[in-house]
Image (cartoon, rainbow, N blue to C red; front, top):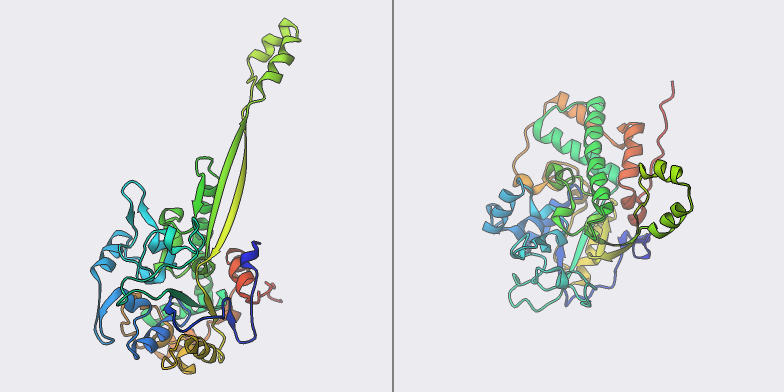
Length: 385
């Protein structure tokens, strides 16, 4: 694994880049199912618009999406931009005319990757945000990451809350298996694209680098690694025909042998490729969803930026109910009231409910999340008879 992405953990749960300075501006990147709505609401109570609220106008009780947000969601099949890795919004959408995926990136002021991505083409600073009044302070990003198992359980319990009675453990595992197959398809398509000879440069921060499966369910299955890191692969190829040696050998053969060989391909072009992969860290601060420590770690990070007044209560951070950690792509709509039977079904769904096959696939498909952020893998054990 690239040295940049080696696991860096601390007992406090704060990972990567703990040396913030309060004169730099802090922005929150919402990874679905990691208490993002709780963070957004806590900030909004103090007049700070993070996450969903950076893509909307209004107040906490009444928010309307901006015109840019509406146009983006119309173009990308209702995909909420606040659930995407920030660099995807900074990417050029169409190289032919230079349009950007999101006209004004709420995370940065300069929408080109030459400015947004640290270290790209000699630029070593994160871009500034023109939406901020004055726009003179550099921006640091932070995220909350969570065990991939817990994210998936949270996603299903959210569906139970919203739509009532989605089923117990059997239906849960069927649902997870179906979604994981699509995640596998997305990753395979990405690998195939990287391997194409004509694909000389692969960039994970381009919308066209990913298939529709990558964005399924409003971005809820995107690996957390992709929010924190940008991966680029440059491929160079050398063609070697080897034709001169083949002709010399043919000249020494008898005429009859030559006649037999003439029906075959006498020369073979071989393409040898060399690939160089570079990983760039885009998010400075990574907090772990690790109740009951998340509120403490969150407070420490806020203090680094002079935001001590933004408080994340334990009950909001660790609660998996709709009101705290559900997806804001639904515009914070009210969940349906569950029946006693629905609540019983929901209580049966947990990490322990995951099947052996699903655990194996989660370990494989989200291996970078486990390795980089230090989450413990479960060992898939067949149930005893």
